[in-house]
Length: 193
Image 1 (tube, rainbow, N blue to C red):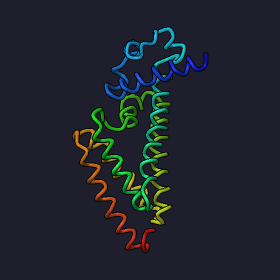
Image 2 (image 1 turned 90 degrees about the horizontal axis):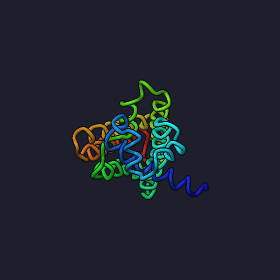
Image 3 (image 1 turned 30 degrees about the vertical axis):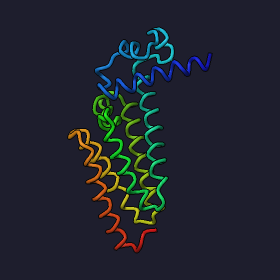
Image 4 (image 1 turned 120 degrees about the vertical axis):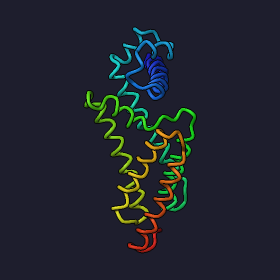
């Protein structure tokens, strides 16, 4: 019974993610989720009692996967400085995906942040977690702590610009700017490890 519920939950979340991310949360109704997941509406509501609970689950799952995949990619690089720059390489790969529509958290905050404190909180928590990840990379690189915020702003700006322009190039441009920031911090604080 638990395995069946988990399988249904995953099918519904897969459908929700594709539709919410691709079309927008407000544009997608539960009937569309039902059709796409092939889960009867009654069963869908047993697993997710409301659309809000489904949106929250979609965002939480996306948060976990996004941060995990970013860390796996960046952590595969040898030096701490390369790991920082790899964040922008990973963004470039993500921006090149055919279904890329920008940051799902920025999108959901834009759609629902004013009317749903829970959605706003989830989006804020995701952005804080991303910032902490970058701050941890900066600390390991023994770079000045002030570097974390500009690096995050470069990444966030690249996400938004890439979505609007439909181009992955903002990731490359942000990486170039990050490289300059790293050099500046190196000159101020000594060599990076």
